[in-house]
Structure formats: structure tokens, C-alpha cells
Image: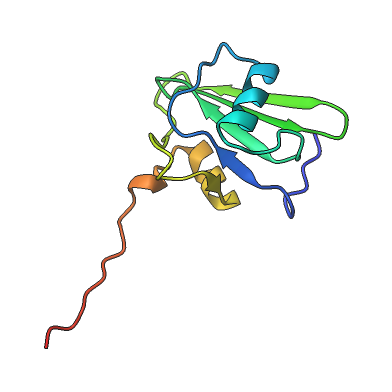
Length: 115
């Protein structure tokens, strides 16, 4: 597993994914639903209904790789709809794996001066 963190992008599939799907089924989801190229070398993240299982697939030179993490307790923070997120930064990816829910972090307040 060799990932060039300087060039790789990280994409997340919001909502629920059927985790019975393996590489072939998930690559179809990448192409049809996320409208991305599964052979790009980018990381694609999926989660199940209970958000206790995370799958990552990516193309590595001559074949697909699949990485899976199942939590015994707790849940992964996960976006429910596409308005929330599609591409993650490396920092957000690390926070996601650590269980930090940055989607519900404090929102920026914007005040305007009243005349």
C-alpha cells in the first residue's frame, strides 16, 4: 500500500451504503453515484447504516485495494446528505478515523453592523 498523500484526494459517500458490496460493487457506486473515476488512485470512503463499519477502496497501480475498519463501540461521524460534504481534507480524514464529528462543530457566526 503506497499512497502519495501529496496528490491523493479523499472522497466520502454520504448516507448509507450496502456493505455487502465489495470492490466491484463499490466501484460502480463511485462511478455512477459519486461520478468519479474509480481508477484515479483517490480514496473513496463508505459507511453502513449504523456507522460502525468503514470501507475504503482505491486503485493502486495494478489493482484495487480495500481497507475496512469495524468499531466495537461508538460510531463514525458520517454525513447524511450530499450537501454536507463530498471531498475531505487529510485533516478531516484523520479526525473521522479518530471519531471527531467536524460536521457538527461550532459554525461560524457572521454579524453585520446595524445603521
